[in-house]
Image (cartoon, rainbow, N blue to C red):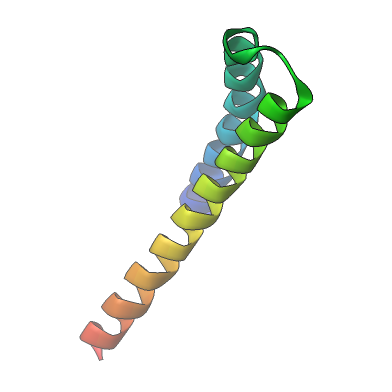
Length: 67
């Protein structure tokens, strides 16, 4: 169980570490406006939500199959 908790914490840390770095790197390419920064943050948050929804779907499907 501690291995899973460590893996989840590490993945969350890396996600929130990479998110601003990537956004700051592509910001000048698209004009550097606040709308670009907001779009980057929205994309990463939607990707995080999609990953959570996918994992919930997979767990619910496997849970039903194991019964």
